[in-house]
Image (cartoon, rainbow, N blue to C red; front, side, top):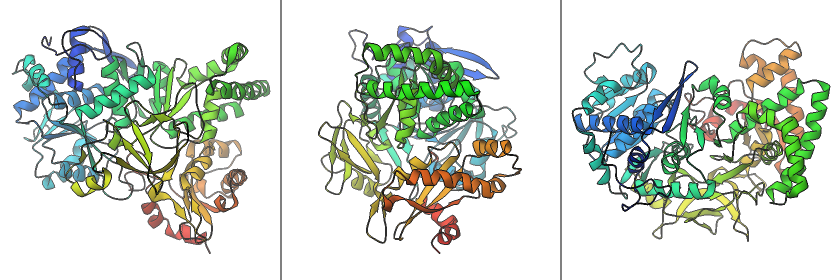
Length: 613
């Protein structure tokens, strides 16, 4: 057991020592305060395995000490290329604890992107999850001058273990056993909170990813804002499923988890995600718009196939739920409203929430991208109080959050404690807070463009602040479309409306410099496939399905419905169904599943031009 952990747990324990000022410090405080309590759970082959705080701390310390044995020094960069799992956290906290810097790589990153990130960061060690990620690194290692060692987390099936550059995580932890655990604790206590802790590479929608440098102080400042906004507690639970190299998931699964001391669950991921969510029933859940859209679609499809009585009951309850939700958002539910909400919950919505995995959810958050108002209204009607937050990697993820009893659909809340907001003359949102990053790694010019001499961060988003301090996001500054008639159009708002349909997965609005707007639409293969099967329409592939005239007609009806709520200049005059699913590895999406507009415009230029003939 680590016996020299500094300070009390940051959630409010009293003690003579100051509260820890780094994530490894928080970890060791938990080890000292409640070593046997459950910190993490991991599901494997249908069974859950628990990790105590003591094991969490010991494994992290052994990993960090092993890196020291390999010659890793304070300030060196160490990369992690893995799906979410406890070992990701052991590596991350081990790296930070010895004063090195963690660089996360998305599991879906192709070899070319892996090469760029390892080369640009100058990473000296890489944690590769398994044979798949190892092969990517080995295919480019000849061009990586700084990389010295690759640590394989799961060596099952790996044939290259005799390579002198490769070792297993178990072997690395074995190296760490050569040193005393107190050595790790002493290094943690000596960390400078203002020093760099992690590098988070941005999604790179318009160019190569940039490495945002975040300090220990940045991360703990964001954690403090999160705790005040969410009211998180030690008895909360989360499901870690968004990539840990994304700053939002990092805040939920490490920063806030260590600050509040709650349990982090790791499911089996992929197609198992809905079942993982159902089994965990988290009390705090962060969803990106795509997750909320799929939940809404799953209920709509389920109800479409239900009996007539169930459909009628559902529609009646949903109408009632919408009315109650509007009062609840405004903090005016009252006794009768609470009774009505309770009855609707028991009869209809509680079973649906349980099936979604949100039966216990207390704090539900939507972030990373705008979510359509229709989706939020639907979820609130079901009794899922989804609140929007806004931020960016460079500001440690969170700048605004929606108050629980003052929810204004279409707005992303008010500034978090310690955060200042300002709108520049050109409409760009500016943020200043203790969470604003140190700058871009090895890119002083980009840093100077992002942060001015007064500490204001240029977000790249355009928005408005109302008199009550609520922020509205218009769009990304670079994505605003200006038609040939000089009209400024926000494409994301139209795209979000189109993606409300359970049959639409992607929508890309086109029209910059054109007379009218058009759209490239990617269908949702599962729901459209189910729709086609029920109508005896045969198909073999995604391309075959999207080429069906009946499918084009299905989407066309929805486009017309969306157009009815838009101004004439915003309406989609023509659309084309994409012949393939957009993919990160093929350069059409970023690692966070954001559309690369320039890449789409190049790849599907023929389809676009055909809509303007």
